[in-house]
Image 1 (cartoon, rainbow, N blue to C red):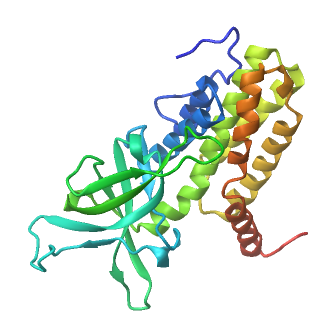
Image 2 (image 1 turned 180 degrees about the horizontal axis):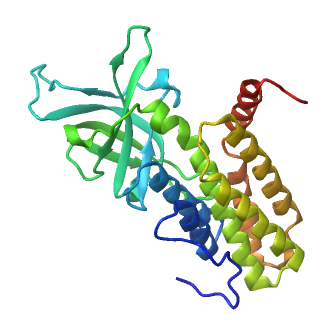
Length: 292
């Protein structure tokens, strides 16, 4: 762990018990925005699936996207020959844009077990080893920003144990709340990274105070129900505050190379912005009022 001249972090960070604190600490120790994102993403998956290793990849997106109806990967009780399997299940499908899958210790794969009486996809989340037979991971071309945050395509035709299927519904218990959990942890890591910069580059006290206040807000929200409309509205406000802090930060204190990397990677902060806006609008509707 790197040690800066002054560590401007909350004194009560609980790295053993709180995933959000690991995100903040990981961001503080990161060498750039991409590495901070990696820290936040990994901590978010540990919040979603306790006990998951730090290097875990959530594999949901397919050719048609990540909406439940777009999930075509199947989890079945029969083998390729149609005969019933004993003690195992067959997982078949093709995933795209799986974040950090090329270096993951664990894949969390969203798969369908069929449709229910109303025609809705029944989804499950499955633990899969990236080294299992029948799992092929192919890196995708790096994006123009944050190239250290790699993505991959995954071809699946593998057998998994029944015990590898996580309890609960793959969408409502995992995929849907993860979008909120990820935002919280990634923004926590971003704030931690900025506090690290503040310590190394002697940013103004007012900037540090506001960063610490933003961290306190994110840490509090991390304990709130991730599907509650109030959580989504408060998170939208917290992200807006973080955006203002980013705009006001004295980035010119960075050395030229670090500044160039920041300017290159900054678009990473806008990824999934439309989904956040839709979630916020839905929360306002659920609250019974929709101010301008």
